[in-house]
Length: 97
Image (cartoon, rainbow, N blue to C red; front, side):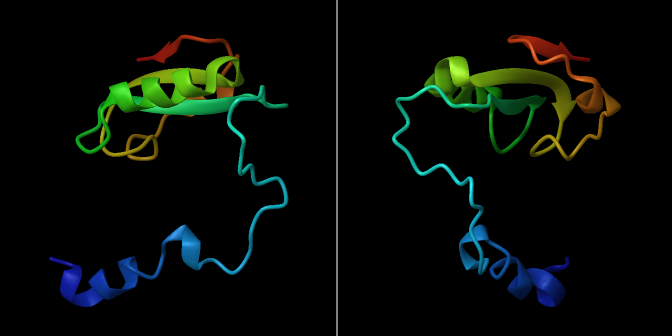
């Protein structure tokens, strides 16, 4: 429905087109413990990225990751807003309902 109007724009918004890079951008190697933990959020009802993919990312990061299982729907954690994200106690195996 919107493609005739904004579809052309979607191709211009990918990160690799951005003119800057974060100073703290981590490019590897990925076999080290990170200074700060990475929060990996997975929706149980994501139609595009299954929760098992979030588990795989968290498993790959090992002790450097915290996995948040969100009993939500939609693609990515932003699809279904939750104020719980602001109250996270950062412990492995968190689940929000």
